[in-house]
Image 1 (cartoon, one colour):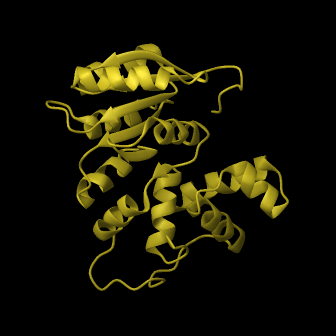
Image 2 (cartoon, one colour):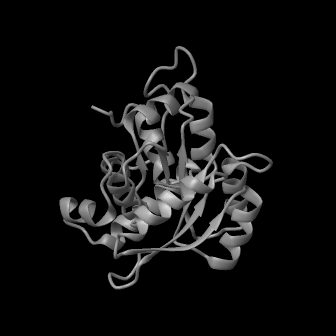
Length: 221
């Protein structure tokens, strides 16, 4: 669901370090199109606030103890919460990245990101576009792909038009941009995208992008 142009993006901050949350709060609050609706220091607290506050975006640190960000994200996914989850972390190991993506996260960003870049990533995610760096995508691919796997080795169930749309999604393009490029309605692109996710048993555009990269339907170059 996209925000109204006049309605600020409602953000929940989740990090067990108060000083980092303060920095995020001050930095993101300087954007006129964003507002911080809550803060949490643990996964359990984040889940409780997410249910109560229903924020548009949750900025989640996955390094928290007890219930970490990935576990909290999985629980939110089970409860069908509409909030988009963006992971902030220092951890770039492939298995951790892939676990975060499988949990339903729409973004995976390093904690040393600038406020300007983070703000832009939040806007992308809120519009339904994934936000992660090529290097992080490659880390995830190293876990997804088994040794010696050949691209196109397995047939996929997608139609040529669905493949075309998947390729554009993997390039980071949103539905409106894709619709304009293919000269179709945005609703048509949305229908195709839903069909793609259903056929491939995927949850979101991030997972679809990784699928396209894994199968050689797109590249990071």
